[in-house]
Length: 363
Image (cartoon, rainbow, N blue to C red; front, side, top):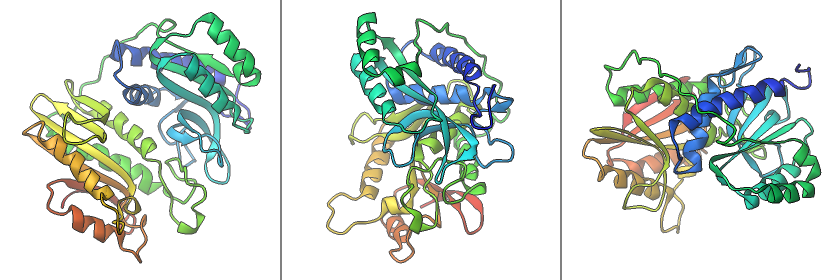
């Protein structure tokens, strides 16, 4: 049973992650990349309940949920977990106490096992009680390789659980009928983005808001730094839950030509597509003197590359912190918008001054 110190019953969570994996493995026989696997597993975990609480929904009486993505499990340690389970009731100075860490690989081999155990050994926080290591596709570890590596990291090995396709029977879950399927794809995606922006906006504070914060040393700014990957995971869950059958959602998508960069989300139906790029704040889009290729130019390159692939295509740029997350003195928002204006995409952001999600706004 969970204690005051530990919210998570590890036996109960172990059952939940196996259920979520069964659903995730049923989606594809093979995942093309780790990112698609991560967001699909997040989506399936989000819906399950631990101690009566949905993993991805706000815990009653607290500003956040138990499940997070791409988050630092320990302040002061640069390592980030693919997914983690936290105790929202137990706060450290900047985030919440992590209890289980989930690391994902496309293929699990001896090199990956060694790297993840070394990473886990670097955590000093004793509240982190379990490490899950899960491949999307194959586990190529031999018993001998596994045994040799585990002997090198005895303390971390005691907390390690390896799960793979050989241990999990795929379980297909029928998708519920979407009630607003008559709405256009753009309208449906817009609602999902604004609902996710509300998660940030309605529970925002510098360090203990809804989304995880990996920037613990930015205390002088006065605003939070919501993790983009955490935001994207919540957005992916809403898209998977709300969009009709036949919709394909790709993460970390690389257009076929025109750029070497990846787009956060690429959504397709038979005759239309939408690309979504997410940024934390306008500081990330600041125009820097003497820099040949600005970040705004890289975004325009990615958005333009997607447009040539599909005649009926729309681009969305989401800047989570729409008003507070930039330095007024340097006017980063105005400078970035001036450079972006006229390129045919829609902008979404949270307006902290009016306390509402805003968008789509045509630039």
